[in-house]
Image (cartoon, rainbow, N blue to C red):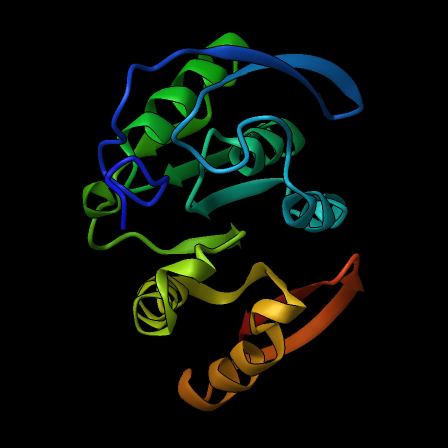
Length: 202
């Protein structure tokens, strides 16, 4: 894997910021992206599909964005639910830097940006939202999802968006088979070749 890939902890090359325009909470805003992160030119199509479900986010609680990139999901959640605390995690240092910059730029003080290992060990989440890094491979992906989904509070929910041709249906079957009995996984949307999976901890 090239060291400048967006899964890398420290992408090669100078950080050259660029500004793009996106819509958050019905308003056009400008955010900062850069090379060496996922989808730097725009909000990718999968994330756009996931964010059509944003109105279902709880008004408050502790939320988690797994694989935050430059921050579109975390920024959207923090805007939608200003009383929530939104943790945004990524292994890529540049992603974390950009998400922090964008949260500051937009005045969103309810986002905590950190590496996965910096999350408090005893924390539980009321919601998890993610466009997970499918291309890391099944074994690593399954480790990531097992770790974080098991940190869902009781009666809480995770929403994951996965492209159909990258294994959304097989992932749904795996989640159903491998998660503990108090979890339920369903497909709640299918749009533009993406599936949105909803995982509830009963």
